[in-house]
Length: 149
Image 1: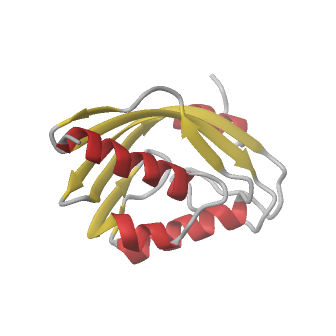
Image 2: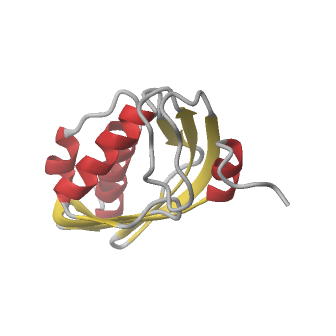
């Protein structure tokens, strides 16, 4: 397999085990570098395995059905892999205040479903960066945290 094929396999597994449902917390230690950067528009950037795991634990407690899946084939070049995705979930868990704008009271029942594109950098067979551009405006509007114009 080529380096690009190897990297696509690593990212494919990351998407399935980290962003899928059910998620596998052990995948963070297995596939992420110790200093991983996870960055999306809805949340503060996360740095390091423990920070990334704590983020996902809280996100999944608030949205137990949270799931994301690929919306197109992965594209790879050298150390970078690009993926398009879609997904979301229903807020049925505890209060959630991790969004950069607003917070949700416990079990609001509000749903979000949105899309995005993510660029991941693979270093020595592990995810070093996951930087995504998501449709956070849509998600925040669906959750009632941002009013439509």
